[in-house]
Image (cartoon, rainbow, N blue to C red; front, top):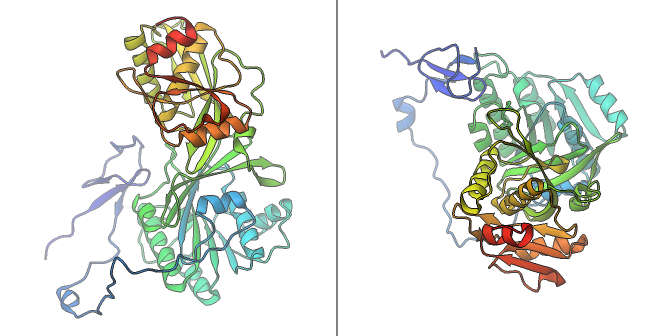
Amino acid sequence: MAKPSLTFVCQSCAARYSKWSGRCDECGEWNSIEEEKPLSSGPGKKSLAARGRTVTLSDLSSKEAPPPRTASALGELDRVLGGGLVPASAVLVGGDPGIGKSTLLLQAASAFARAGLKVIYISGEEASAQVRLRAARLGLEQSPVKLAADTNLRDILTTLDAERPDLAIVDSIQTMWSDTVDSAPGSVSQVRAAAHELTRLAKERGSAVIMVGHVTKDGQIAGPRVVEHMVDTVLYFEGERGHQFRILRSVKNRFGPADEIGVFEMTGSGLSEVTNPSALFLSERGTPAPGSVVFSGIEGTRPVLVEFQALVAPSPHSQPRRSVVGWDGSRLAMILAVLESRCGIPFAGLDVYLNVAGGMKISEPAADLAVAAALLSAREDVALPPETVVFGEISLSGALRPVGQTENRLKEARKLGFSTAILAKGGKTGSGDGMSLSKLEDLTAFVGEHFGAG
């Protein structure tokens, strides 16, 4: 009989190794590699040869009714879910510690319970008394939500199978412990087994399940990536501790659009919805200064206006600093290289700081031109007109490329009082909503027109 091969898995990034090592080569964590034992020995020849049931087949032209949805009183949450909660769906919610995940889900549990669903909230990290104190602080103590505090997966599954709730919230998946897996709670094997069992329960019993997941230092949900493939929807709860804004972002959604966002504001009475995030992100802008540029972006299906802030200063060090908050640091290095190579504007010997105001995280390439404008404005100490928005993608040749949903970007900007837009030539702009449009072909033309150089 062949000796079973051993597998060692990093508990931080799920990297797999054939032997134990003190340090993970993928993520750099120390003492995070543990042996993973298989759940079972696998099926034998007899079970593979056994005759199974016939799978039902259908045509591609077959039509089915869309899944029913239950809307809550939280419109921003419903938007991210694709219009409401779908029965028998599995949802994974991740976020930094203390960002407000438990507060959001307690408010969501109360909202769905008031909408007529039978809701059970299971806490594996806090005692029932702590959850009740939070509910009292949020004014939700009268909500018809059933509460339990346990980490034994077998007992939780038995309870859910007996109660048959419409929605079960498990906070968090890393605290669940299965007695069929010989490893510590929070390990890769335990997390995978717990997620699999809860997802299976959701599909078999028709109950929606929302699971909370911890995140790593890189902001990714901790544990094996297979957990994200198991569930129907993956949501990230983002935000900066120093800001009151919180962003609920849909990374994956089988029942709605991905990359959709919901915006909340953290207050003393919990999370409140922000129906017009653009106005809120720009509310503290004040008098425009050099380095301040407003970008009109698209998050999912929603246009959002945010402010890019740049600061360029002489560096006392031999290696200038490049500090970025809310944007991709490698993308910033590319923009600086294009400005120097194609436009002849050097940033050597200068510290560069870039920030997206309000704690927002921008990932779309359409922000390239806004970033370049902010850097040039800070370097030349020249402020752009306060009623101007900027968007467009920059290629390595210095050419400007048009971006999608230009009409929606301009419409949102016009609604907030902006009268001028700087964008790439081409693309569908429609009537421009009465705005003055400055369409440019390359970055050199932008520098020459707005900063008197080229």
